[in-house]
Structure formats: C-alpha cells, structure tokens
Image (cartoon, rainbow, N blue to C red):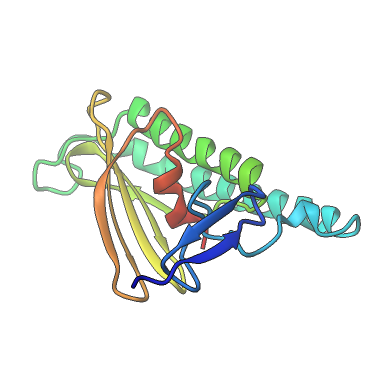
Amino acid sequence: MLTRYRHRCLRCNRDFVSSSEKPRFCGKCKSSLWDRPRAHLRSPGSAGSASRAKDVSYQELKAEIEKTKRILELQDDWDGEGSPGYAVETFNRAIAFLNTYAQRLWESDGIPLPVPRIGPGPEASIDLYWKRPRWELLVNISADPSEAASYSAEDDGGHRSRGFVPTEKFDSRFATWLKN
C-alpha cells in the first residue's frame, strides 16, 4: 500500500497530499519553498531585510543587463564563422522575460530572482545561464519572436528537465527551478 503524507504549504497556506515525506514542491502552488514562511510574513523586523534583498538583487540584475548590452554591438560574422549579429528586439525579449520572473517570484514567494549570466547564444539568440549550489539552468531566447524559449536544467540530485517556456508570460512550473 502506498503511504500518503499530508502537508501544509507555508506559501499558499493550502493543504496537499504527497507520496513523499519531504516533497520537492507544493502540490498546489508548486513553490519549492513550501515548507518555509514567506520572508515578508516572518516578523515586522524582517520586512526591511527582505526589501533590501530585493533591492540588492535588482541592482545586481540591472548591472548584469548593462554589462551585457555590449553584445548588441556584435555585427554579422562577429566570430569569423558567419554568425549573425544580435537584434535589440531579441535582447529586449530576454530582459522582459527576466523582469517577468523577477516580479512574479517576489510577489508570489517573497524571494528575489537569482541573477543569471546573460550572453550571446547560437543563431543570434540570447542565453540566460544560472549556476547555483543546487542546480544549473540554461534558457535560450530565440531570435525568432514566434518561438518559445528553450531550457535545459539539472539539479544536484541528477534530475534533468528540458523543454520550452513562453517568453511573454509567467510559467509557475518552470519557475520552480528558480526558487531554490
């Protein structure tokens, strides 16, 4: 007989059932921080530190974006192998993607978006790369605005995930990779 465990998510405040004693994420809201209270709900004194964490993360993200704008200067054949240059529209879609996730992660979980490395990808696409202690994630924003972003992720337990994520809207299942 399969053992079922009852849990309460401290993020969405809902009960859920899992076959795991310590599930990776909430069965309702999909937060991987389901067993930790939101930063802004801990105590009145912690709200200031949570706000400072958001400000620091925002400043770090802004600095990475500014530093990365240099790829817009790369012309066609910038690498001597015929690679196309990078369009402002592609860069702006990558930044909009980051801003969407930064805002929604903060609003839903009270955590700042980890700052990725932003760099040139293949065929005039933009790569967003995160390497954290517990996981790695690569998101590729295509130069073609009609294509979804592709991603490849792996955690320290060897769990891998690959797929596509829309660039214009928030995907809560994909966001679980960014929450740990």
